[in-house]
Length: 308
Ligand code: GZL
Image (cartoon, rainbow, N blue to C red; front, side):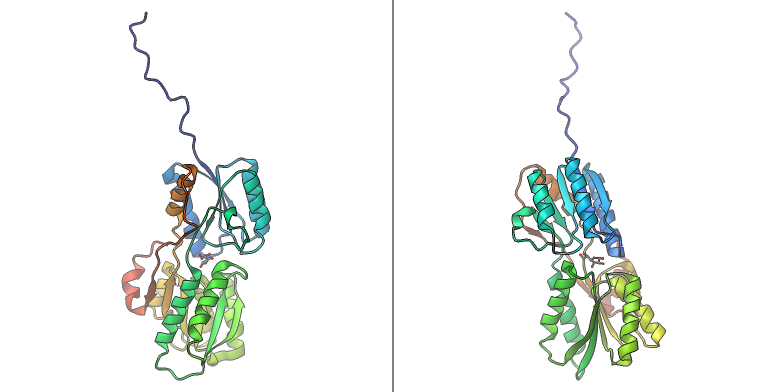
């Protein structure tokens, strides 16, 4: 009998690595790039294998990506839905395959909320309210009527729908704040610049306020305002959403007056949720990240803290 002792019993069932299929909606903005980086980094940190598909703002490509994840039998599907509508069929396909779905960032409009485990993302309605409350405060001494233009995000997306609603519900407290033009500009710098140019050509210095649903469109609008010969942040009060470093640099320069933060760093929360789902634990239906509102007075201090 060998005097050698047997090596310690090797667990033959090695810890199976969790595989997550993530359908990211696009790469349209600095916010989105920070969001993607956060999710990639958090997956690595958590030892989770991430299958990543960028849909470049196409819902159809999101459906294709999810069908691919189902075929490959991933453990969990995560998706940032580009628009709210049209998700029932594909979510039913994931349910038939027995694969749980977690929504990241944006929300979906479905009759059966059990089709997804949870939505991890900001309260966009509250972000709109914060923008409206800032404007009421900023204009408290100004006589009306005051003309507002609005650069909306992707049409039909939950941030666009909810930010617009929250903003309108607050400013209607003053009957003389009038939204004279509101157009979708898809959260991009280019479309923000083009759409703001068309607003200026139509209304010129009658525009006193710009509410931009994200920083990238605000950056594009600032270029258009300066090209037109007006002073952003002075002739036109500018309120934006997200909180990217570039927007803070503009606020330091006095070209943006208020930034409502929308936190893209959802990676760690998402991976924690994946692990809890895999452990069979139940999750709240809604997980909302921390976020603030910043105005010109704190821009200098905060700009150095911006991680994206
Ligand atoms: C909000 C996110 C939005 C950002 C934009 O959570 O979906 O999409 O506000 C991004 O910058 O393009």
